[in-house]
Length: 512
Image (cartoon, rainbow, N blue to C red; front, side, top):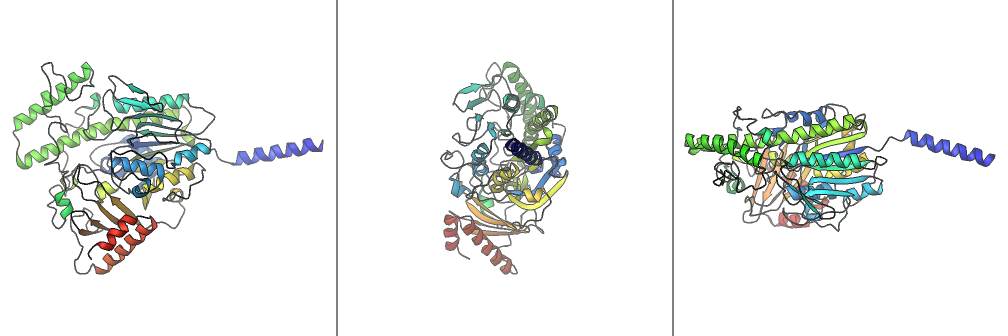
């Protein structure tokens, strides 16, 4: 009898302990490509409305200063998976192969009983461990009739469909078929809003009645900034009328889109009617040159970019609705982020790469009912090396020592942890495709200090409080000696902390 009594008490105690433990949350990480915070209404954008991204922010938290360590697509994804800088995870440049023999944080989730999946764009050149299910776009993927490769390396083409819709359909299918007895971690990797910005058919011309204001820095002369002057990413010179803006694309005698043979007959017709009969006709009639041409290109760029983002936001809404309908919303963390920032005409540019604000900062909104208070704003400097440890802590999973980031869950929970006041950045890819010189730098709450190296040897210093557009390089000016010395000391300390020996060696060789 005593034995049975002890057993009963033990079972009751165990049951009580389990009852006191909160359910491990599910996690959906929606990860887009090149989606600028300036194009998201939750961040105050006047360019477009993004109601479903805004919903996540309004029901959770919005990070105001989420920065990346290397502003380019593949390296950003490698940092998400490893929680490490590019120099340690080995993925410094785009279009390389990710080293699958290194640890990735989803493996830790698997050990903790999570089902893991990545669906959509991955762009790592290889399929990493840590995922029970993979169905990803090869390379950059296609907007129309996209191919998907699964974990067995089988390829399936989704004929006549649009990529954002397919990614959502595949994600919902996996959610419906998962093991409902286990928590899940799902990355929904969107191709949008990557160049060449092909909108869904239903979104063609969505912004044609809008005349977007030019950014204040649109006609930046790059005075005192050699690297900015020598880049190759301007809307004026680099953006292509044909391939980027679809002016007189290669149509054959039957009005077929030669450059994009993945369209169904109905899609080809719609594209021809819009881009050839309307946009190209408008271009021909205007006979544009000089500033008028540059500003027309800017308008067309934003109209296509934002129309492509429209489908992205709509599909995010489909996922949120699914969670509500299935009763999953209360115990599912939902995150929306982009791999880095993007230029929407600031400095006359598109693309990313530079340490400057528009490409350094990336959107990040997160909803966790009952844990994160709705409408919270996080002003602290958060880095994408922090994403992995935060996801691990959210799920009650041990954070490996080799991860370089730090969980910002305490910031989301209104705690007051000691937190960084400076973030480190290092970009490598040069000279192609946009001739942005390699550089490293430090971004603090008020200042940015950056060193460009390679064929040039220049420093730049910006006071973000007085010069948020970063048009005036203060480096070397009288009165900046102390702040420059302080920032260089912080930069060196960060290089040591993050074990960037290559950068530390370059720093020691630079001229003052």
